[in-house]
Amino acid sequence: MNKTKGIVVAVLAIALGLGACNSGNMRRNPGKIYAPDMTYSQAYDAYTHNPNFADGETSRLPVNGTIARGHELPDHLVEGDTNAYKTFTTSMRFTDAELAEGGRLFNIYCGVCHGNKLDGQGPLYTSGKFVAMPANLKDSKYLSMTPGTMYAAIKFGKNMMGSYASQLDIKQRWMVIAYIKQIQSENGGAPFTFGAKEEHTAMAMEETKH
Ligand code: HEC
Image (cartoon, rainbow, N blue to C red):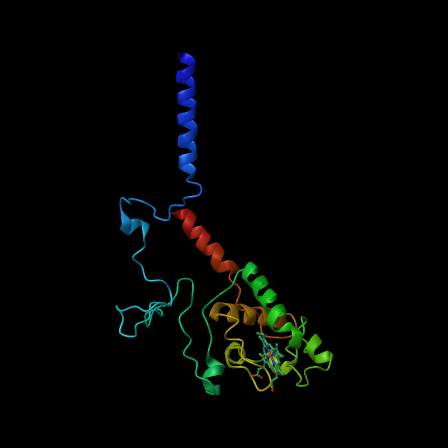
């Protein structure tokens, strides 16, 4: 008797097991859902029509006048206003790590023409593939160039040099300029003023006091 019971239980278990697999008879309906609005998102998918906005677009631009986290205020420099270029500057100061990052960016974006040594002998120019002579940033003309004029060259380009505004954000542009100014200061240029070492130690001391 016990044996038959055992067999019945085993057969039932196998039948249930197979039933769970639902093989051969696929169910396409997920069955009852407790909270459908949690299972199925009510959000609009990107690029779909959205009746909630006048322009019908779901993907929105940032609100006017807002600045993304970690980004700088816009610079308001207008192309062609060379007087404004000369006096344009920044209060940003950079740590050694940031200056090294400026150097890395320079070698990526500028070195191909201006040379990693800033001497205007980058491989694109020396190979003859790019005919316009890039500025020799170690030349006295450029040693005395104001940071704002350099900034304008990066933002708007200069004659045969294209704009790097889309590759370098505002902070990165200044990091590159600070790097150039640091090298220039070691090659007869004005003393380097973009360093932040002292300010940082002062801030660190201020923090330990609290
Ligand atoms: C494709 C080559 C090329 C690249 C890349 C390039 N430049 Fe230039 N750059 C030039 C040339 C050519 C000039 C000379 C323009 C002139 O005076 O006619 C120049 C001029 C300059 C000047 C002098 C601007 C002035 O007002 O006289 C600065 C500063 C400068 N470049 C910085 C940079 C920086 C920083 C980068 C990288 C973000 C860079 N360049 C990338 C070709 C290049």
